[in-house]
Length: 183
Length: 344
Image 1 (cartoon, one colour):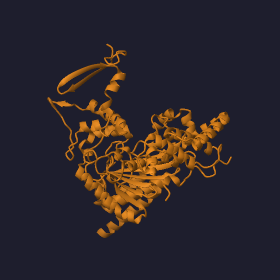
Image 2 (cartoon, rainbow over the protein chains, first blue to last red):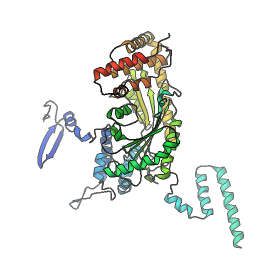
Image 3 (spheres, one colour):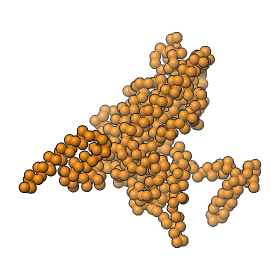
Image 4 (spheres, rainbow over the protein chains, first blue to last red):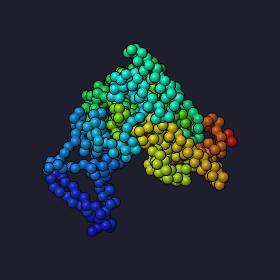
């Protein structure tokens, strides 16, 4: 079949559009389909980011399609952020999060796309001053000896043997002190 | 007061400027996609208020609500890379804090709540990063930023999450651009998580051979690692540009010399000039000056001139809206008056 628009090239894309409940069908070639569907990639504000958003949405979307069972027992499973109401679908289309909470709402789905975009899934850089993480809190409740032991383990992994030796000596001294106090 | 791009750093022949952008969001407001008009007003006011004292301490900081600026002023700032087109046309409340030399600025309620930008002349990324970092530290002292232990700084777009850091070198690559090498180069640097694109005009080659080299990845590396990786790539690109320049000069010296002086003549004495021609010709004489073919009485700052011949910047200086015909005359007048005399 030839493309309905240019009537020159072979139609390879079957395009369905539903306007006011009426269904329109078109058989287009790749080139005409791109022109015809151009508006899909145009953001509301017509910004330069539109193309990037399209790209993002295709990266994010490919993961979504491959892993997400869309229909469960006849009804659609909608993943939505509780705080701002952004749905996962809307996020995929626009390529933008609605609020900070979306990151935890969309949870696991994000990891693979982050790996595709950044090649990583967790942050190792700067933290805001005074930020107390979960791990920090746990460490804070530990005894001095346990805290030093964690640092010792860390130093050994990083092969910083001088630091490790100093930490080992500190731990020994502390343990000796504790024992003498207990006696 | 000099603008930042008038203060020259190192490596001016290839690296025009270094810039750092940090994307930050306040924990308590939804991101720009979901923020309501009234929340946007509150958010902009809150951030502006926070920076009032900073503006006092650091002499010469300007604060404003973008709604107070005219369209010409806003688009002239887009041309000077302070504002994005996105924020210039935004209907919702948005704000700007900016140092007088325009090297440091904070956009409020753009794609993210805060976009902290710092620029430095030449290959001076460390200076730009330190400044942006200082502003970030100041802001996060009293504003709680959206941050998660796992994902780092949470941003509107997944492409900025983590460090929220976008570092970029503004590079002048006439020899590589002239030889149509930019496309291949940008594929090459992409493998290292780095992007390369033309700053002016459409398409990969762009106008005026000015390109931006920037980190694409923001998650999974520390800030110093990201900057170091980018610096390494920048030096590779600069080295390739130098090699290509040497090759060109060794093989086509006479043609290049002729072209440079012709371009100078047209720029200096034409009566009308559109911005594309002006940028192309300015880029040619900068190349000539960098490799010593042409010598000027005063050092030539092509980047300053390129910014000043842009349509909105011209209108901003003349103080009114004018049509393209009048702009072309104003542009030619500006170039005639500001191009330094040749001494060789």
